[in-house]
Amino acid sequence: MKQPMILLDGEHLTIKQVVEIALNRTALGLTEEAVEKIQRSRQMVEKMVHEQKVVYGITTGFGKFSDIVIPKEDVSRLQENLIMSHACGMGQPYPTEVVRAIMALRINALSKGFSGIRLETLQLLIEMCNRGVHPIIPEQGSLGASGDLAPLAHMVLVMLGKGEAEVNGTRMPGAKALQTVGLPPVQLEAKEGLALINGTQAMTAQLCLALYDARVVMESAEVIAAMTVEALRGIPKAFDPQLHLVRPHPGQQESARRLLIHLQGSERTTEQGELRVQDPYSLRCIPQVHGATRDTLEYVWAAVSRECNSVTDNPVLFSETGDIISGGNFHGQPMALVADFLAIAVSELANISERRTERLVNPQLSGLPGFLTEKGGLHSGFMITQYVAASIVSENKVLCHPASVDSIPSSANQEDHVSMGTTAARKLRTVVANSAKVLSIEYLAAAQAIDFGTGRLGAGTQWAYDQLRKVIPRLQEDREMYADLAKAEELVLQGVVYPPSMC
Image (tube, rainbow, N blue to C red):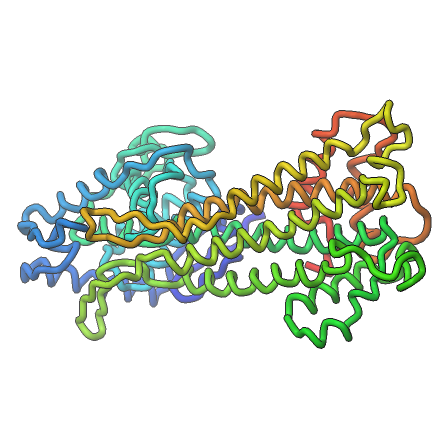
């Protein structure tokens, strides 16, 4: 069932709403206040053109050509040329959910009334989103300053009846896509092309979606880790609140709290000194490692929430004061850094998960049958699943090299420092997806290991175990493991691994 229409005003769009628009195709609209702000901003642009004032992007060229004044009769042609020349992205197209998030974020930024776009032009973009006209936007080509120029230019091409779009799963020319849903193309006027493409929406869209998935992966990691604690008869005393109060990182405290909730009532754990005095780090330090990722998630969530409602255009038009200021709000550094930070943090969930999986399958460490199979030799059991986890963890380490530390000057050295934020955000989504895969391997292995023991499971771990066993039976003899892994991964990403009360 679709959500009610989300009305945008440039001030209150949430990450959750971006995800709803992207995944559930929730409809968009503008508030009355937003309409008024857009119209006031447009009046400023028309006044500049009429008075033939020299203003960047309105009556001048772009980038290195910013000192070239454009005649009044060529102002509209300038905007169309900008879009066509900048639409030079390469690579595979973004998934539809990313495209929809990009469109929603750009509409919201323009609805703040600082960019000088006409209301009818913005309404076309809104109707494209609402009627399912999704521009084909290549993944590669953005430096993350001056915003996401190439990706956003591909979005705008379709508004002009050019480029390509997807409608109802079919890829077609932009003109046909508009015609299919009964929308006319637009002819851009002064400032509009620049207003539509000067922003950080491609990187921010990917960050919104990555954050949503990362939160799900975070909670799945907690209960899956608790299952491994039980399978290895671990010591939950390491999660005692007293311990975490004296090192008061909020994420660490929250992870310890959730682990104890998941393990509540368990008969599978042990006391200090019962089997061993201390557990290995991959069990004992779960709150410290997972908790640091939790804190990172909260930090990044706050930064991206701000960006969702920011003006990232240039120049910025202030209708109340009459000022038109050229600046650098399009620079993606704030998003580039947090995308790299979150990638590193989420990869650590996979890193420690793979180590727990190794303990589960290694008989010298677990006290369980080797590779969790009763007929080792004839059957390989979970031997190669640990290989797969190690492979993906290694891939994440490569992907976690920060994109934000790189910069290549562009536009004849006029734009001499860039963020590479869109590359960082694209890598982040891959790291999050990879981490879900690694956790799904631990999930399967932990459930298999639990089947070799006896005693009641904890409140949360019983839930997680039951969700898995509804769709994947215990491994009695070797079978095609890729199918089990795919099902387990789906459970992790759907967020059904942890009890609804923990959402």
